[in-house]
Length: 125
Length: 494
Image (cartoon, rainbow over all chains, first blue to last red; front, side):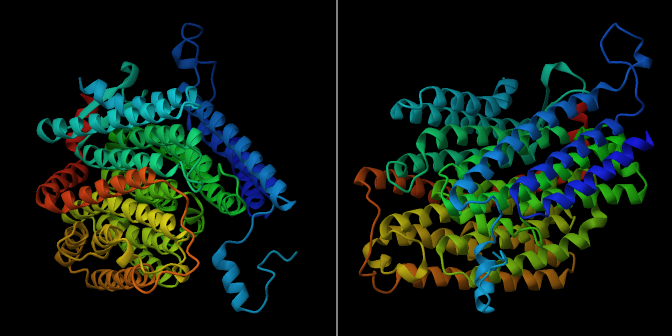
């Protein structure tokens, strides 16, 4: 397994996790894109050493890269692409409704905040 | 024949969804097509159960690929037991939805029917799949349709709750994918049957790392403590039918996957951790329910509390414990769905499900009171209902292993559950009906369909308690097969 690949997975995961702790949905979307890349790279890394393109009959089987993780990675990419679009639509809708794309506190949090006397509900507007 | 039945449970609802979208503007055809697809899947699942219970598990290889390379669908006894319950529930809910949707509060029928079809297909795939990656795809299929079902009305509360829901579940999915990569690099396979052989051979650190990783992944989907915060916030905001399906199925698919993965790969050492989490989940869920003042929110917290019991059954890692967890799954899915459907009927009669603004329904709608009382007492675990047998099975397994603490915690949580059910009963069925009652505008025919669907589901839960004996024997066999793994592995590699 290539060290650079592992390093890339680690860096992408770190930045991705940092971004999804943000309140703005557009940052979260970026975070998930990076995390998705990390997962795909991890899949590729799990497939063993790099090799020739795994096309039947082109090269000897021993020189080919492992095709199974590549198939999995492709499926994962398609899914994360679709979900990124859905999240964008959600952010757009939230912007239409509230003027921004911030993830709001849940009802329970707001109730507790009210009991506490402060009513900014964590949003600190 | 079995090939057709097994693939049919996945493909029929998907085809129905496509056809339902195509004729979306013709309500009668659309409803008929959706119901037909769901009914086909449900009927096939019962046929699968009969076949598997008498002749043992069946595995089919899609495209003829070997298990190392391709997708395998496996109908073992565990899958065959859960599948009919899950698919019947979706059918009943769709029936309810057809009644409700002609009212203002129902889900948008053009979208909800077909999306429910996609969700059903994902549920079947998640239950039948024989490898981790297809399980990931099935989860995505379920989740993507659930995201849209939750937010498609685009109201502010739904978008707000939808964001938390989507972000949490997306995070769990990404962790799932990373976990698949870890498992593949550690063992060279993602097929569950091969994993059942290879995972126990790994060094303890790697093995437990994988087990703990997937405990968190499936635990987030199942809403166990402390990963449940997304659930009680998002479920109540969706239309009744959608919440009913979510509550009855989605978290349960997480528990199903956990039972399958952790028993097949023999993660017995994780048992104590699971028991601790199970105990906290039960109590926190039950206490959360007590603090709420809305029928839907109380019921949402119960979903969490009950997850604890299934986790407890699994965490005991004994044949009796796993069998108890399986029986609990079978009991819990329909009961939870019915309670949410009743919540929908309450909202239909009084325009709200907030306890402060409801009341007096026992005198005005005695039938509704009965429909609520049966599943409510069942959920609290009182005899002679299905909840009693299921809870008894789990607790007996705990006592068998002298796990005194978790058994005590489970009993306390059961009492708390009963207490919060009493709260609903007092708030909704006793007292005076509010003066400013604003029932939803719906025709007698709408209501009749909704009552029929709810009644059907209540009869279903009664059937489960009637046949609790044979069902427990089947659960025991399923648990033995899972823990032993030999029948499963031989069938896949045959």
